[in-house]
Image (cartoon, rainbow, N blue to C red; front, top):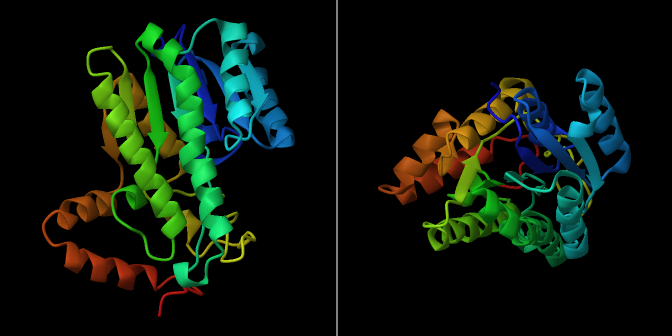
Length: 274
């Protein structure tokens, strides 16, 4: 029997990167998958790809959803229940990044990061929670090492990921006796389009990645590890060795980690760090 046979999984940001790869993984393990994303065109492509691979197109639902809009998140949950009658897993994956020094940053950029990354997670979780409690299901927050340690030139990104960590960590404790599983999932640098669309100081997309995407963990590998972590009902996963080392060392020698991180990040092409 497949690991998620009979389960209903919602994935935000499902039209590309980790979200799309996760949708494929959950579907391969028998889940009914609800695909949520802002881009209607990409969403349709994803729906067609997944539904055409299997015999049961009725196991997929595509919902246009901008997670920074509370009503969109509310409708996402409503349409899921309307079609499938339950929710077993909510994967809060939708997110955006940025790269600029805070001193140069238009504050609307930071607000947008919080609206999409943090509030998108809060909205979706709020409306899904009664159904997840009923199914004793799992809520997942895809964060980053930037949610454990501040990432220079990514103030908005780190702030939003720290906020997600705090929100989900608290939610886990509140529901210790309710059977709800809360997973905080930190992939590290993963090959995706998130850096191409990352916002600059004035809010425009940077349009190119400052990193060698081919040398990073693939979205497919990341998604397999996410799916496995949900199945095992883990509470926290940090994927990459450098991510694990950063979190560990920061407990004991934070000043050293500050310097190492600064020097590491300033090596990026066109880095705002000097």
